[in-house]
Image 1: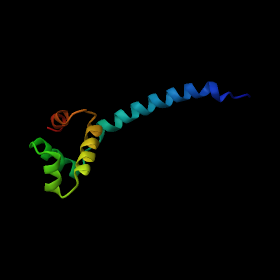
Image 2: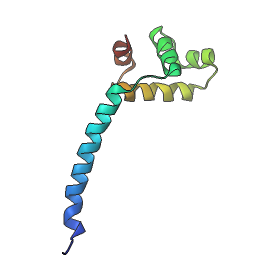
Image 3: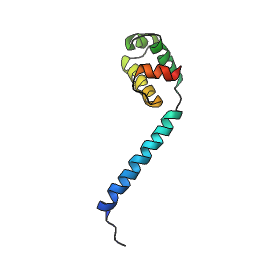
Image 4: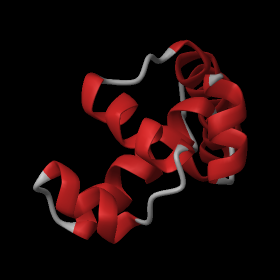
Amino acid sequence: MVFFPCYAMPIFHNFTVQNTFNMNTIITNNMQLTRREKEILNCIASGMSSKQIAIKLFISENTVANHRKNMLRKKNVKTSAQLIYTWA
């Protein structure tokens, strides 16, 4: 049997990308926020800035931004307002 990888690769690539996307969607919809993420989300909901949150929780602003980014990804939303809405 002769195998031609140049012909099989596009088919395999499309299959992999589609299945990975669907699996990620399923996983992110069921992911729960960590205790720290909930603390940060509570601060965001109360109107605090990233700098204020960082000072209150003794972490850097970059850490706050990373938590915010992870929460947006987990809940599959684009803005903090949507994040608060899905959490409430």
